[in-house]
Amino acid sequence: MVNRKGAAGPVLDCAGKSLDLSRARVMGVLNVTPDSFSDGGNFFSTGQAVRRATEMVEEGAAIIDVGGESTRPGASPVPPEEELRRLLPVIQALEREIPVPVSVDTSKPEVMARAVGAGAGMINDVRALRAPGALAEASRSKVPVCLMHMRGSPRSMQRAPEYTHVLGEVRAFLRERRDACEQAGIPRGRLLLDPGFGFGKTTEHNLALLAGLDGLVNSGLPVVVGLSRKSMIGRLLNDAPVDRRLYGSLALAVVAAAKGAKLVRAHDVGATAEALTVAQAVLDANLSEDPIGASWDGN
Ligand code: 7PJ
Image: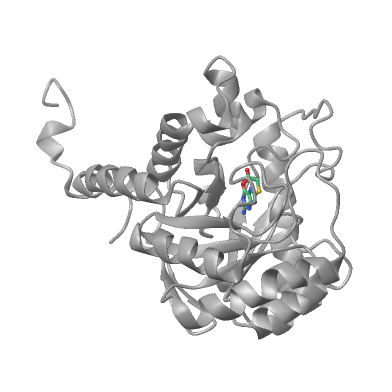
């Protein structure tokens, strides 16, 4: 079915498991880091990680995003061996035990290669394949890739970010990365785009990007958004702490879906899936627009 905001989303082949983006879906977040701000690093043993992922699938997640390196503001890099030690057992188990694809949240080519070898069906790279060797590795992997915009690095990105025109600059960056991917042999049909909310952006930048999200949806590539529990929500709600950002997260998820985002990265999967299902009913009702109802005056 065609959404008013942009074309019908594709069905992506994620290493043999499919991801249907004909409407907005939820990407469940599974952090396997000790310092993750969102889950306190509670999902550490493989068994616990698989249980949490299974729960997210039951709650409606269409894909599970597994990350072994924190990318929150100020976070330090993790060596690839440590990232792999955290990720591989979890990815291997999830590949067998859940019906939906697993995406690997990494920027390192050696981690991409091993993760896809272990069964990951998507690469989610907050650095948009800018690490040396990442384009070639992603090309070899044959799985879809999410290209995210980030200004600076996690360690430095929130130090007074400035833009002349944030939407234009994010769009130009993602266009350049899309072209670099195509040149490296990754076809457009395997790419997703993400404006990278909170990655080198102030609350005002984030709001402008979300208000103008149509300008990315117009690319024709599926758009991914990560807004769940982010600090902009805290800022808008009198400095609400992370555990009081659920309703704000749901509001932003619905706005993003109404603007045509196809994948919503979220920690609170059940609540987000319900919000999107209800919002989608309204978006679908728009499809059979009644021309007589278009104008109050009837002309
Ligand atoms: C995002 C992400 C996001 C994509 C994180 C957090 C920080 N990947 N990984 N988009 N955020 N594609 O969850 O708050 O916004 S980590």
